[in-house]
Length: 181
Length: 133
Picture 1 (cartoon, each protein chain N blue to C red):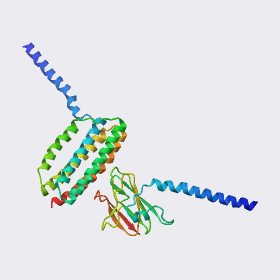
Picture 2: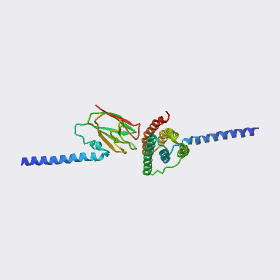
Picture 3: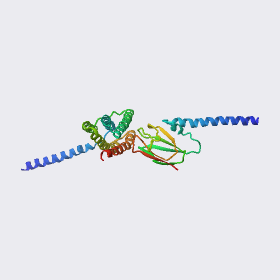
Picture 4: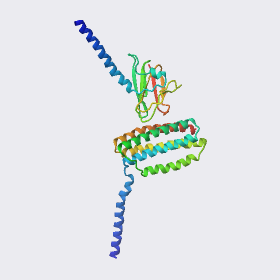
């Protein structure tokens, strides 16, 4: 009887210890991104929006949508160019990570959705996605990438990109009104 | 002899003054990378006659800073792009004047003759205002 009780107590003890040992692992989901990982997220996120813009330039005939798409393609390429130049200067090789993969997985679905639409339905879908995408990107830059960046030049580039993305969001919301009348 | 010395001094002084004026003024103008999309821009170089005012607007963090500027007729306003992307400065109502694309680091200036609302035609939400007093 006593042996049974001892085994039960030992089992409970083992489970509690196991649970405690697992806790730091759960905490690791919030592990800070390294600078090479941040560079990868920055380049990937900008590249994805350029690809959305390229779809819009092919499929839309709306002047406001085309102008917005043109601005997205040029501005995000400018950010990529500067991020790549900085990574080169710092000797940093962008490194894929969970955030990059998450952005890429979302982009596959969004591109398929955009490619399935035509006319005004496409315009609305594109601009709605731009609003949502820029909100997500702003959140990521503001709350993850900037706080996690350790190199001052990388942090500064991200801080310069933040008002740019906020302006893109305001521009997208302005165009969006046209399709929500 | 005294007269010769005085004349020599005056000539030397004039040469030094000319040299000093050249060495101070020219590099400053060279440093300003001013695109000239039209004749207005050429006239708008900061070589305005003495007595007219010069104002500066910084394009930074996707804003014209200051957004609103009061000037006198004939004053020159110079915009400089400190952002990481290309902007332009365009009269909003009738597109009466525009800087054309202004790459990061570039400046453009305009002699202001009337009040105007202006914006960046690339980033439509960026707006500014010039008021002639």
